[in-house]
Every structure is written in structure tokens, then in C-alpha cells.
Amino acid sequence: MNPKSGSLIRAAVLAVLTSSFSTQVSASGFGVTETSASAQGNAYAGAAANAEDASTVWFNPAGMMKLESNQIIVGGHYIKTSSSFVNQGSTHADGSAMLGGNDEDAFAEALVPNFYWVTAINEEMKFGLGITAPFGLVTDYDDTWVGRYHGVLSDLKTVNINPSLAFQLNEKLSVGVGISIMLLDITLTSAVDFGSLLGAPGAADGFADLTGDNLDVSNVGYGFNLGLMYDFTPKTTLGLAYRSEVDQEVEGKAKFKVPTSAAPILSSGAFVDSGLSAAITLPQSFSISVAHEMEKLTLLADVTWTGWSSFDELRIKYDNPAQPDSVTTEDWEDTFRYSIGVDWQQSEKLTLRTGIALDEAAVPSDERRTPRIPGNDRTWLSFGGTYIISPAFTVDIGYTHIFISDTKINNTFESSQPALASTLTGTYEDVAADIFSAQLRWNY
Image (cartoon, rainbow, N blue to C red; front, side, top):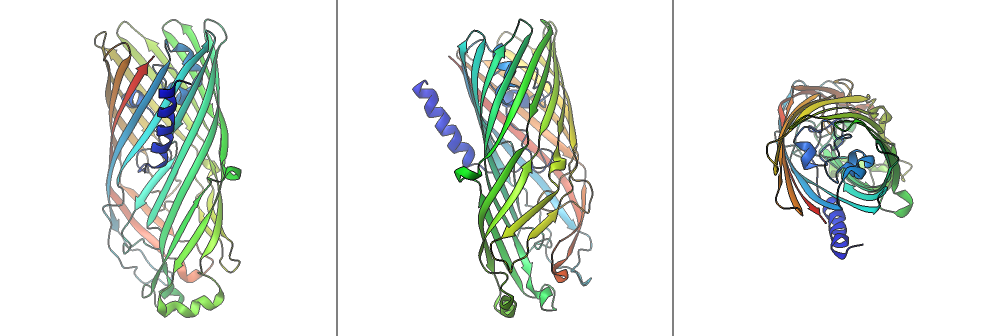
């Protein structure tokens, strides 16, 4: 391996591991769409067929055979989200009003990096490596907001290390295959309404802090991806790409803060610090893309299906037998993402892009929507460009504004103790996101 490329790979892994995410309004579920600045410019339309650069390792590894040189990409995406929550009659389990403030700053700024490397093995085979963050979220509410018993901090980070191979089978057909090695780290916090357990709802708040990861070698998640690229004509390409589910096993710790007035509750043995474990299946996906070149235009289209129905519940088990499982029923639905776009080669050095996308929400109803992931259908409007600085270096930029309708929530907290079953009712208003992307390509 080239020493410079090896140093870049190590730096890329470190950058992704230490990044935070704010994606609950920019992608379906808690998926992270932001994986390429060039594709960001046309809302990822045709991404599995338009193998313009090394980011094809993620979208369709078969596309590596279309690259004319070895290439390294270092990129990043700045995400700024905004919303405001309006309480509309949230209640404790006994029907009394749940007090607390609204929260307008739960969706924070974030940076999502990515790294790609493609190198030729011979004329009919190429190797690629992608380091991305395909899933992630951050929602961070004030400790005293009205929905604090449903969630305060939700922080999920993933890193996917994706070595891949591509093969040229004939003049028209190439195929690719890759392996996913996925790391996951998660933190969930919430207030605990000990007052309701004592007959005085809201009078004695405690706190739960749950953390876990799969960084132990025995727990790392594994999956695979497949790709096919077929040239119907020299100008028209079809791309098919599949990514498998990834089963994640998480282990960690639960820490509880119990107010002095609620000390008698500890006699049950519950709400004491404990180890924990959880399992989650991250979804499979399948994409169909088409790219058609004209004189100076490339027309792009894509349909991507994501199997979010694998996320039926979030269950956290505790080593402490006196502490019941924490269960959130999700019942998410499979989703489709539709996108169209166009690239315009304005000159030999400059290409301009635009695209739109419709991205369905996985949350099935107001009752299943939680403040940790208050998703809704999204409409993307994207612009971008590519400038060739020299034969060795190219820069890509992209910008997306995401439009989201007001999002209602009417979620009842699930608990084995009926007194804790509060209901959060309200609306997320003025929800939107802006994404700024940039990457540098190095051809060598």
C-alpha cells in the first residue's frame, strides 16, 4: 500500500469514529444518506449507475471498473437542522398535565466525514475501500423539557469499513462485491418520573443514562453488498445495488440517579447501576439507477428501497434481574426514495448539477413516533458542481435544502409500571435541514 494512502485511511477511520450526527430530518429512519459530495449535488439520483468517482464503492462497487485511474477521496458533510416543538396536551398516566418547556434546539449541527480508495489489481479487476457513517442520529433536548420522560439525549454513531472488489465480465457488464464491518456506539438518556410512582406526578424526577457499543471483537456487526452495472449503449447505463442487513449486538452500562425522596423505591432492587445489552438489525436496501448521457447533459434517476420493517422494537435488557426490560415498540415500515437529477458539463473543467428527491418516512403513525427519531416524509432540492483543478486533483461541492411538513406526535411511554406510562402529544413545527458537502479527489 502507498504510505500516504495508508496514513489517510487511518485518519479517515479516526475522523468517522469521533464525529457526531444529526440525521433524523435528513434521511429515512436514522439512515445517513450523506456519503458523497458529488452525488449530493444531484440528490443522489442515479448514484448506482453514474460511477463518476471512487464513492461508487458505497453506491455500486461494480462502478469501480469505470474509473480511469487509481483514486482517493476525502470528504465531509456539514448538516444544520432546525425545528420547534409545541406541546399540545401531554399528560401523565393519571391524566394530569405534564409540565415542562418546549425545546427548539434539539436538532444540532453535525459533521459527517467519508473516505474512499480505489486501486487497480489488473485490467479486469479493481479493489476499493470505503469508510462511511451509514447510520446515525443526535437529538439533544433540555433536561426539563415536557418530553423528558420519553427522551433527552439520543446519540447513535456508526462506522462502516467496506472493502470491495469489482470485475469486468465483458465490454458491457461489470459486477462488484463488498464486505461491511460495522462499529456502533449509542447513548440514550431520559428523565424518570419517580413522582408518579409515589403518587405525585412530576414531583421527583430522577435520570437514566444508558450507554453501549459493539467495539468488542465478538460483537462487531458484519454484512455484505453486491452490485451490477450494465451498459445498454455507450451512453446508457443501468445500475443495480444491494446491501444486506447487519445484526448489531450492543453491551454497556446503565446508570440511574434517584432523588432522595424516592429512596424507598430502591428497596425493590430496581433503578441501581447495572450492565445492559441490546440487539438491533440495521436494514437491507436495494437500488435501481439509470444514467443517460447526451451531448453535454447526463440524465439521472434512482429508486431505492430500504427494509426498515426489520426495526420492530428497541429492547434493552439489564443484568440486574429486578430491572425490567426497557422496550419501545417501533413497528417501522419499509420505505422508498425516488430521485431524479441532471449533470451539465459546462466546460472541460466544470460540471454543474441539480436534483430532487422524495424520501418516505419509516415511522408508521403519530402513536409510534418518538422524540428520539421524530421522522416524517422529506423533499430534497440539491445543487452542486465539480471543478477539475489539474489531472491529479478535482474538487466537488454540493448543497441540499430539505423541506419537511409539520410532524405530529402522540406517543405513550411503554413501561411495566403503569404509573410511568405518560403520553407526549404535540407538533414539531418549522422542521428543515441544510446540508453543505465538499470533497477532494486525488487521481494517482
